[in-house]
Length: 397
Image 1 (cartoon, one colour):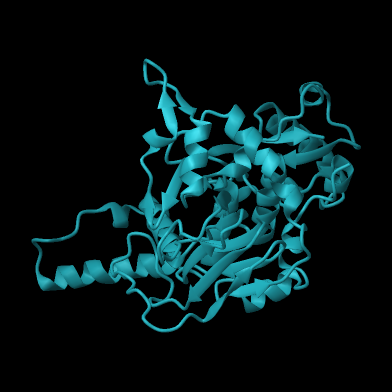
Image 2 (image 1 turned 30 degrees about the horizontal axis):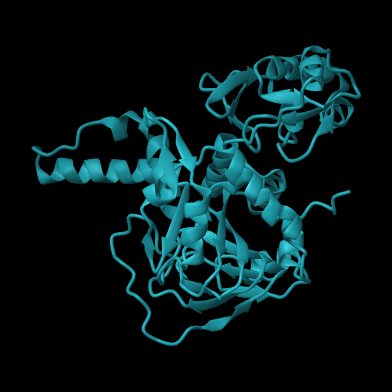
């Protein structure tokens, strides 16, 4: 029997989620000690061996790195005659690792079920997409030189030990494709130590770090979560403002100064009108609706349930996005429901029930009907849920 599934709360224990988010998330690094073996279930060595044996893995998803440089993939991957398939050369792989290389496997959550469930729980807790990379090292050479990541990063040490150095950021909240490059740190690390089996290390975006194996097998997962930034909010707002014909109009390059001043004033007024007090809530709702949902397949039961009528006891869960985005329709008649670029129209009276729908938890029809202003609206809700089911926006448990 497997132990209980590892969760986000387990990773940050003994802190609570509210304590972690208030004091550390996006603010400062955190190292927590843990009981040896507490993360081992996520991806033991035997599971890694199975993945390497049973998947066709190409560089750069599978790669070897040593002293800050990638090793030529031809040293450990062979091609079939037509070059369409890459095959692992296990003896050559072992030789490279024996000589000091670090094995890196990206998006390992797509191949290891327990890691996938942990990634899903991270997304539930943090409200942003999470991917997981695996690192395995043996000797004392670092796989990567001193660097910073553009995501929030949490290290879970599965087995063995690793020596880490962590430095404070040299540019506050750096981003990919930034207009200014972050300078390498020149001072002492803010934390240096050994991450042992069961330990966790969190580093916000922009914190510099480097890690070294300790001449023994070491296996860890890197959970990378990508919250939205103000740059993305402003980009979304610009896209949203394309609905305004004044914004789409040509810039008055050939008019006099008075006309130019009038244009700027009108454009500013349009921007301020769109940049209202609810703009952050609207943006986050849009992110939830647009989120790519990890597929949940439950055959053969799911096929039968999908075609079955929805009853008061039926439990429904979102299959698209984390939550629905619900806006007033352009013609002011009814509401527009959106998820992953699909949209539907519904009555405003059933909106309270639709706002309760989530990817992370299921609700019975009876529970949803209890949220409606009038019992008579239950029939309309049931009919709309049937439409969502037929178009694949929800699935019935």
